[in-house]
Image (cartoon, rainbow, N blue to C red; front, side):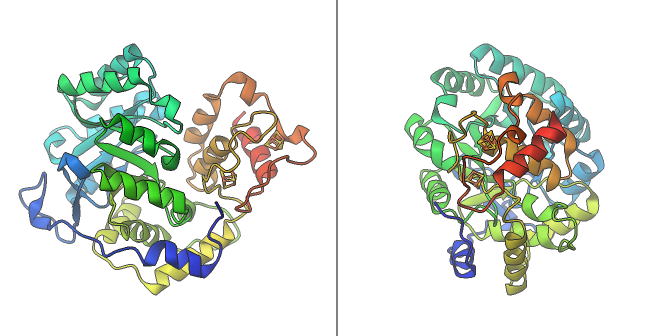
Length: 378
Ligand code: SF4
Ligand code: SF4
């Protein structure tokens, strides 16, 4: 799979998608009076009506940003048990006090056994200060073998007990797990990486379309990261880059909502404009330019390099953690993820290789990027 480096292919990846089918703002899931300029879509077979711009509350959420998001009509909030070792859920739970019925709340478990998944759910409900979540995801499941019968059974039991209304899978490699998810036939929602920088990959597009056609509600994550960050540091980042990037994602009618991580109220207020504004030629030019600038730096998560390092470095994972810092300015999240890798993996240093045995078809400077990650987060 080749990165769409030509302008023509980039346009093809985004602009020729079918017209977006928006849900009427009168069909709100949670609001008696609708804020203006909020667009909703139905989240697949869940029937939930979600604001097309949601909120990825991330590892260090700001309660004021959460409160303002609700005021602006954002009704979808996404967190995870492992974000900040539970602090993300705790802050979110506090910020949602008295407002729980206004939002659709998703969280995730990294648990692999029934017992760990049940334990995580209890901890999540406690931290989020609620009796139930709306969507419970198996977190970061990038290969079929990580979605085991045991984990599916655990999710179904939690659904039966009313602790979650729906169940889902969060994945960085939707192409790798789509068939498995469809075969299992139990999941209501899939959350996956999708952005202008990576979304044009045909296999990823095709997997998203197939899941959507089967009634799975699709949530896009990492939608703005490649345009919101600081690298290269010697260029002026386009102020409205994140807005353009969200608009690009929403061109795809299969995507019901997006969960950009928003650091402050100004960013939030800009991002929510994506629900009401059209994608323009200026947006496309801005994103195309940025895409070229970050070519050697930003891993497109195509997984072409999977298993190719003779020293077993999980290249895509380490590069994703680096992106949390270089593009998301989130050092803690990057380091936290890196330090969860097994010791034998963390002890491999790319600086010991004189050249890298792996070539990236998308132009990423793998060795130097990995050296940077390994030095920063060790
Ligand atoms: S580093 Fe690997 S996963 Fe990332 S874009 Fe290159 S080949 Fe794809
Ligand atoms: S530099 Fe060496 S250790 Fe690092 S990814 Fe390449 S081959 Fe693997």
